Image 1: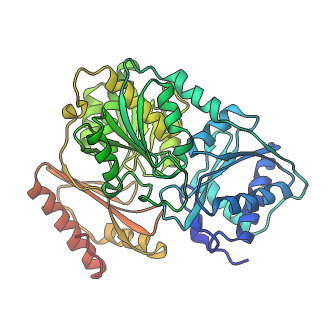
Image 2: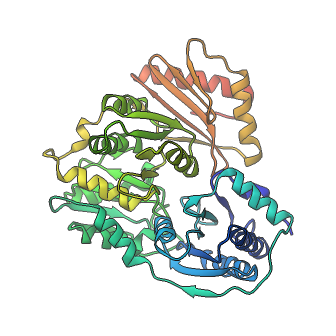
Length: 454
């Protein structure tokens, strides 16, 4: 069996469908998952899938592998990743996998795995990889049954949310899995909903389902304007990430969203710990302290954030990509649709038409991605850390390197999910921002003259 070991990433498993994730590889992964589930004393394993074109085939291969290990499969059909997470709390098994390429290009697919309500750690991903390589599988004859979790998922959100007035909202499902449930949720919460691209279509004919990129938000911006919406909400391909558009058409990045979420959470839970990733604004940390909470910076990645929340009993977590994790009246998993509902709660009690006016902001870049192969990206970051010198700066190296200067900061890290280097910059003025970017660019080009962040 030819196995591309780069598919086993820090947070999950991802690769090109039919190439990296071919029939033999996926069947063997199913055998490994079913065997691991039984080693943990489990007899059932949940499998859900997103709307990508390759997901039906991958489901057939994966489920056959799990069943051949002697483990039973619960098929929950096409779902969002958060619906899958919900199923591990509501069905007879607390473990399973959702087949999803998330925000990756259409030819990709992947697996987000949960054992006993916890997302797999990087160590567990490595263990599964070795299990596949060594063919350490059980053998048996499991059974397949189907469950529909849509209504229980909708009820879970509706029971947790109280929106005090009727709101007009626009949503963009991006032809991803959100289309099966998002509009139903918000209508049940009493909203008037204008929906864009609610038909699940794995070819993504309108735009790529990644709400962290402004180019994917243009149709939603137009809808908010034309329909005079109170807010625009967008979701990625598996709906575990949230994008927000203000009434004036401004893209509200997740670290600014987090300031509002933190305020709500800390008001109801004084002294709360709030987790956020290294890509987030320093203003978020400052706001958490001013609100009486405790800021905790963390590596980027949904599994790292969840792990930090568990370890510290934090009430809220979030990262710049749009994953938001509520752990106050929600069971701690990231859910773009639920996070959107929490934002609607906040908007509904505000007397201002645009609540985001009062959220502080500095001069910043969006996330900058530089294409670099998976086998080189970590090496470049290591060389950057070893060879760069930043006088009188605070160095945070828990995930790549974040360099905090008196008037701003810069970040360089290797993506856990894609073959890219990730950079972000923030400063008090445009001149300060350009100075920091130039300093990073000089250091990067000294390592590899072919690379350029401009």
